[in-house]
Every structure is written in C-alpha cells, then in structure tokens.
Length: 338
Image (cartoon, rainbow, N blue to C red; front, side, top):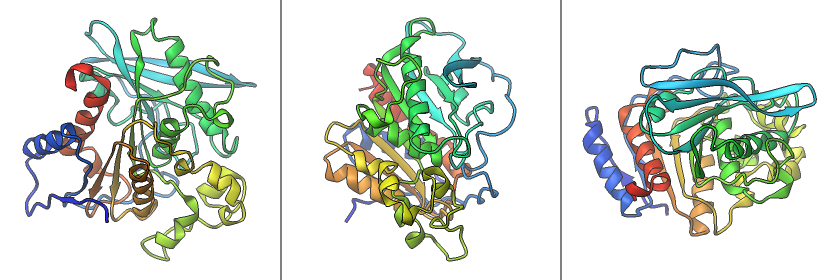
C-alpha cells in the first residue's frame, strides 16, 4: 500500500497551520500521500486540458515583478520558440529557476499568457521561465521533449546575462505540461530526447520537479477513467494519439518512449506530484503509477492527493497548495532552506 497522510477538514482548513505541518513533514524527509477535502474544481472546457491556463494574450507584470517577453530560445526552420522570464523587481545575486510548462494537450502556443504562479514565485525569490513548445499538430513526439530541453539549455547558456543560478533548476507544469516536466526530470542524459536546439552541449537536467496532474502511461488511461462517458484516450483523435502519430494501443512502442516511467533511474531528482482524485480528463491513477515507480527506485517523491478536485481549478492554487509547492522548491533549490 502507498503511505497515506489524511488531512480531512469539515470546514475550510487554516492554510498556515496546514502548510506548517506539511513543511515539517517535507523537511523530515517524509513521503506523503495526503488528502485534503476541498471543493471540486470545474472541469476544463473542451480543448483546454490544462485547466484553462496558458492561453490568451500577455498580462501586465504584477507589482513587485518584472517580465522579459519573447526571448527566443530555439529556431526550427522558420519557426521560433520563445519564453517569458519573470523575476522579482529587487534582488541580489543569482536566482534559482523554475521552468513552467502550461497545459494544452500538447497543443503548444500558450506561453503569452501569464502562468498562474509565475509572479507569485518571482516575489519569493525565483526566476520563472514560461516556455513554449511545438504542438502535436505541427510535430509529433519527441519534438516536445526536444523543445523543453532546448529551453533549459538556453537558460543555462544565458544564466549570467539574466542573473540565473545555472545549478538550480526546477520544472513545473500542469496536465500535458506536468508530463513534459516529468520528462525533463527523468531524461537528463537520454540522447534520443535531447534534440539539437537551444545551446547544444549544455545540460538539460533539472534538480527538482513539480508535476500537477500530468499523464504518464497513456495505455492505462481509458481503463481508469472515471466514467465511460469521459473523453476516451485510445481513439485515434485523442490528444495522446495525436502526440505519437496514431492510436495509442496500436503504437505501444511510441507510447513507451513518451512515458516518463520508462526513464526512472536511481539518480532522478526529487518529485512533488499533485493530482485531484476526481480528475475526469487525466485519471488519478496516472499519478499513482508515477509515484509507485519513483518509490520503487528509491527516489525522493511526495504525492499530494486533493480529494474531490477535478482537472485543475482553485484547489491547486490556493494558499495551502502554494505553500506546499514553495516549501518543496525552497528545500531543493535554496541552500539556506535545507
């Protein structure tokens, strides 16, 4: 059985008390599967599998942060891929980096919208790079892996110019962005997934991963969906099938190469996995599989289950969840926090 830490509240929890308790557990090295009763989040509308985040036009930088927009990190033929870099207005020294990948069902094209926590993290002493990647309608797997790795390498190559700490990177994403963040964390030296863009020769490794409800083993998604009426994943037009170029059950070798679990090794970075148990788009079981694989490899992994939550929504961005994420990132990217 997976270890379970149950925190069920008859009334809305006190975020600070809960966050402190969770932070203590993290600092003690405890691996948790926690459940907090929160209001169920509304399902994302069709075509917005990332909870509706990551689309639209650029938002102004909130007070206390600056944003450098449209930094091109790689060129593929006539296509340019770029990122937006959020930083605190006032800081000294270098900043640890969080690479944010939006949820889009691998559709790409969404970095121009403010990431939900980019400015919040910047105000807490991080540089946050909101990155783009090619959509599956333009290029199939492993092109998306090549793109996110190119962004990491480019950020390392330009670390001095933008006051970044090249040794302290984390990947964070939701839905398909969570999948790509896990790929970043687990494939630092996998040549097939590196690609040639974004300052080749530098490392694409990250030192920590936050995976918000990302898929892992596509082949098991339909078997564990909440209801037969939910969107099917085995069909040839599903986002997963479009990613690999054909119906997933008929392309199992390609699916295995897109499965983060395929690449789990004993030297992988620490993971924080967060998933809503009522997710109707990416079954909760997908995160259970990833958690179990990382635990079996002896890795540092924390699994936070949000009871009653769906595919994204307020429960993933309230004060409690943000405190959990910040505690995890501080622990692994800020030496003083250790």
